[in-house]
Length: 481
Image 1 (cartoon, rainbow, N blue to C red):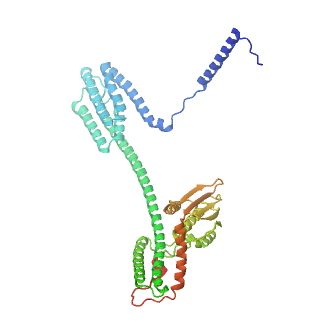
Image 2 (image 1 turned 90 degrees about the vertical axis):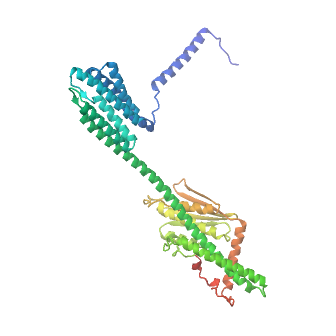
Image 3 (image 1 turned 180 degrees about the vertical axis):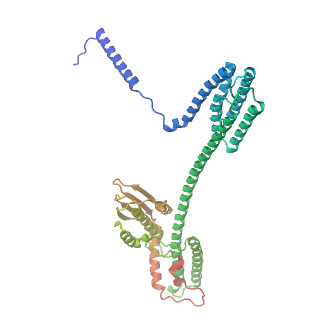
């Protein structure tokens, strides 16, 4: 059993004393080691000019009150009010520069006439009509005015200041004084010109930043539209090819049936006619899409020597890899799963994704090795292109590329998914999943069988008599692109 000693008054005092000493020690450490958190640079930099102006206003208040009261022989209370108006104008100019200018001009006029009355009475020389402190205060006001208002308003304020100075000193005048009007007008002009220049520079920088932002947005939008136009051209090629196959099948079908009914002949003739009309419209659309750059060749990595070459499929992936290896990149390929016919759009998108990914490795990861892995799944195709850490720094990029943008557009068109991220070892991986539904797979397999049958029959099919049209199966494949 634990034993508990008796509670005594001495023990209670020792316990309380120990707790008090610990609390005082913690308080002592806090008071001597506590430091306030520094303000972020953006905060104190924003308020630094305000602090400078307020300190200058305090100096103007004290100096102008003393100059008007002692040297100008103005009543001390009245001199303090005039000095307070000029100093207040400096602070007010931080938020209301036009109102501050009017207040400063009013303080100048009241102070000038108050001193003039004393000069007429005593005949003592005095800096007039602008005192030294008043001149400094008005310089601050004009500078802040030129920084905050349009150039026209700043010039008008400068002109009115010069006119007022001329009228007070040159027209009204006084008995004996030290003129400060000429010096004041020169300094005011320099300050206003400086403020206008700084304001123009600030506006130019702001406009440049805005134009840069707009240019970047326009470049991104143009890149997106160009990539979508490229994808549209490729998909139109695929559709045009299928329309050609439909036209040939509709022409061949009556010859494969012994004594076909007239209704079947009419329906097949209508199908062929509609296919030919659709093919003509597709040619027009393709002509518009290709009219901007009719002579641009495909990329060398893709192996497409002409803009009207057939669109590539996964059957040409080996040629793409060989071309990439010839460019100096070590590439390994791997495939898993059971390969089966895929829709042309899926095959084309998969080929282009691999092409863009390998191009990015060549461009941004010199000296790295790449791996291409195709996984054939019952519900789609998974494409993975990864590379190791580059052995040297890449060359500077010539503008903004749109490889990943094109990949995302192709995957989004097929309702797939795309991930592009850095690997822990310093490499990079692009993985895309292109879904394929059961109906599309069956249609793709049927299309392959139909094309094979058409290729076998088209060589011996005679042209029906009484038609003036060019046989659809005699149309060169390049003409449908």
